[in-house]
Image 1 (cartoon, rainbow, N blue to C red):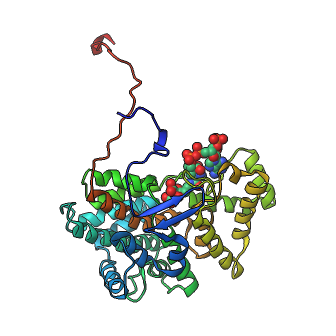
Image 2: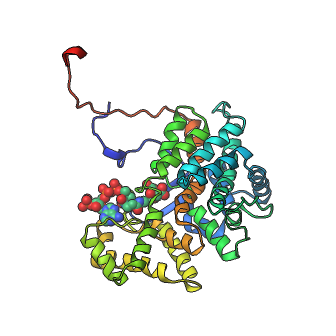
Image 3: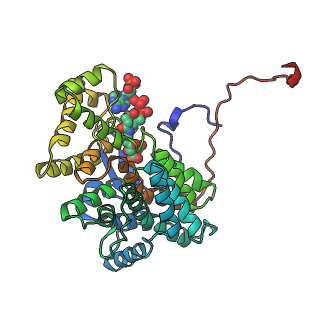
Length: 382
Ligand code: SDX
């Protein structure tokens, strides 16, 4: 047994992977060798999903067939819709509704008992999950606002279709392209907590629905995927405060508040995904309400120039600018983390497929520090 205990598995290597690599010192992220900046600006989410799952960017025929296979799976069953309606009426949290929806996909779809070694079956289930999440999530939101769900649009890609099913209107090019880019940026990120959770489940040779459901649970926490919603809550607080937004951030830091969207286990510098989302947030602000972008950049400026956090390795992460982007796209703030899950399901599935291909049950140890040689006293004498 290895004896040096690493709380939180910090810095521990547990696998080899060809999927993505993070350079935390240089602030670089690549998916299968492609820089995230190039993918975000030159590909769409379906191409990136194909790259992660199949190991190369698709040519036109491959992309057409892949996109068609996703389109064929976008519809969800009446049972799933009825459950989304019931959960919306019960005011359930969207991440809990999403976790339930994915579990239901396995109940209403065949193949959950397929041999995990059957790569094609797992890919088919992976496509079903990825294609159905936007439909189920949009239906949940429509029920929440007292509207009927909108069927998927046959001519729209996964990103634009989600916005269409959410609002009932086809998104304009800027919104569609921005949202597609956000899905690309969130698709994969090494062995983050939710991806590792999915891998642990996959390493027992459990089905892919169980692995994705577990990933959703892990992502929902405020230290992980839940931070994007927390950032927007901070921006609302600033907006409603009597203080000037710079005074607000000064006071918050004095009170010792930890700013969501700042800091990262791996990045010691600004997350490259935050840089791209900042550009999009600025573009959206130029043509709309610039308060949110202004508040966000003021926080970053203060934490950088006054508090010197980046020198301590604490800088904006992917969640810091995604809030103001999604808000300007009119997306409800408690849908931000579910959107993160919508994209990252592709990465979870990719890592489970890759790990199961050369599988080893993930089973770490703990150093026992409890008592020894306890004598059992019968209940009547305790
Ligand atoms: C994501 O792992 C991934 O790849 C995740 C992700 C992905 O794509 O999957 O990138 C997505 O989860 C991004 C992170 C979203 N979470 C947040 O924004 C929540 C706020 N940030 C943190 O709480 C924190 O930075 C973590 C949880 C993200 C990382 O925490 P670590 O590595 O466990 O570091 P830590 O909590 O021990 O903090 C180290 C130091 C501490 O200072 P000291 O107590 O040692 O003096 O940095 C400080 C912390 O106080 N610090 C912060 C801070 N985050 C860390 N100080 C002020 N504000 C913050 N936000």
